[in-house]
Image (tube, rainbow, N blue to C red; front, side, top):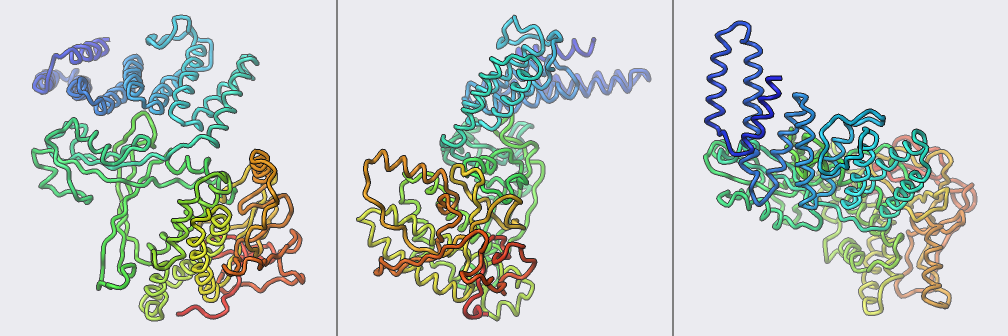
Length: 638
């Protein structure tokens, strides 16, 4: 009782302006010396002094920033306090600061963080009719007598906050828990109907409402001039929607007008960390997505997968390029090494704060060849993403697709991957680095797989390009024809595998990557995309609305690359010569025979060593793509 009374009084007195750092030191030294004179009070007295001084330190930090115009650091101090009260099992004080934190978040429109904060209180309650003994907050109605009533009210408020924060996946989890109570515990079918309708709307919003992915920033506070909760620590911040780094830095520096911004992204030395000044370091980091087993080898809409790339993330990486070895003025890729730093935060983001402290950091070195493989994979993913976006929404503007395709197929723009071939595919490189033979094969495989992706992108571009951009498109097709002939002759032909959705639902995105280890699941039908050419000439249109309805109907029964109800799929791999538009090459293949038209199976590719899948005519590449792999007509230039 004495301890509880002291903690309550300290909380109110310090918040009211009493006490300072000197008082904390005097309290600690005087009381500790008194307790140590008595054997019975030595140990409990020492624990009590540590408890009170720990609370005083957090309360003084909180008071120092409580009245700042920028409430960012008030939130950090509030979390430090509520965590302290949770550790010493003072639930009433813990809940009090939970609601202070929630109010701060809502005032700054941090609805997602406000929802997570309220969820901490809701998790303390049971689905029972026990009386609610915790102190009532201003949010709660006096009629909420039981824990079930209070928990239900909190859950509905949390759902609203998650909805405002566009975290519909989290809102769905809460809806499911409420639905379980209405269906199986209280048998309130009217409320069950309402909550299921809300849940259905959230699923619809996931697929239809645009959600920009937030940027993440690493921020280091160095120097003895910062308060203790920031001093010489690194935090990962979650930016707001469409927030530029310049705007974020301005917001960050406003409470510290005398702080100096560090230009380097490397950790500072002791001369900075021990100095009496204030130094702030800020740079953008990339979230590292945790592998989702339930998404592996499945065709999933991008709107679903994109959410997990930037949410529920605890690891973040920063890549710093540097040169190593003799400089090659004609090919920078040969000496481009990457120093990659990975930051691990105390808790996943988003959470009850928009930032969390970094607990650990690791640094790895990426070789030029590994960097080339990563770059090619990202490029292929980007092409795949654009194709999926245009498959799902035909009304999208074509300009981003134009820039992406032209930057790859036109060597005058980016140089293509020719510099990779010069840097890594020469016989001299393999002799110097025999351990890189496997990675060289991966890079070749990624280059070969880029061709069918580019072909489909160009097919979509041809269908959507306007008349004034037609010369640009013809130039792009000419470049692609040359690029395809070169790649297929050296690295073989690749043909994508389409996975038909058994339910013939909405258009799907292909979830692919280097960790694919098989091509299909039991019960899924495989459709091989054979070689085809340009889109057939459309029939005369009746009306715009009818045409759009037909287009949507057609898309609903399609998979990636436009599978249309039949068990056959047109390929993306062949484009005609630009001047010969009448030329059409197509080949239909049934499900039962994925090999050649005469029933013979194609020979196994020499480019893809390792175990072969059981499906006839299909093979796996070193990078994990599923599809047909044909040998090159001549040996690669090693």
